Length: 253
Image (cartoon, rainbow, N blue to C red; front, side):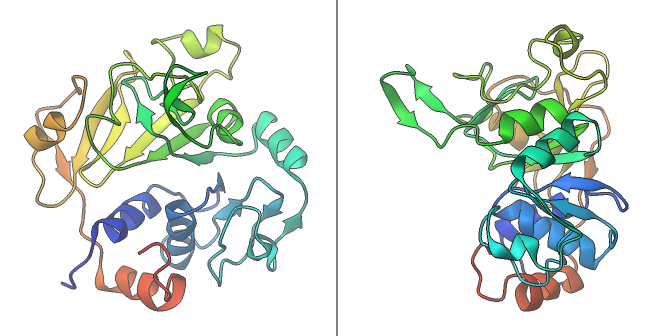
């Protein structure tokens, strides 16, 4: 087995969450590599959608940003951000990738500020299209590093709605029934959400990690089942694709 780093592990785990014959909103960075890897392996018919209007590019070369020219290379559609968000509002986009500085037990995300909004300790880029993606895509996948400062009991600012404060809250807020957070991919584990309580639960551990380690790096109580799976390590072929074809310049790996 070839050695791998944490970024490569995150990318491979994220890629495996994408199903074939679906449409997925892709953000800058690791989601781009994950989508490119998924298309080269188990999901050749995955349609990558970029919020500035590129839909279904071949991803032969890694885009540098969601508005970059490579997001339109041999794309099925070259449109606009307005058309893409309308498509999501109509229910045509199955998956959306998200990130943030903080996430809470119900999958709410903060990508705006830490501290007082007007005089914050730290100011982040903000929502961009993340609020639309989290509100309108059927399933959202968050990718982030694991740690107590990121996994918090309550986000300091609500940038993107998860399950808000529990069952039924999304629907009461006017968001589509059946939509919401689906997976959280980190360097320690893969998490999902309990169907009844909508709280985050541990699904699988990254290789060499224990459930106790995951809980110790989480600022709230995770739901942990009796039997927890272990994610497969990146395969030699996945690593070859990442290193030789997808990101040969190591922009993200």
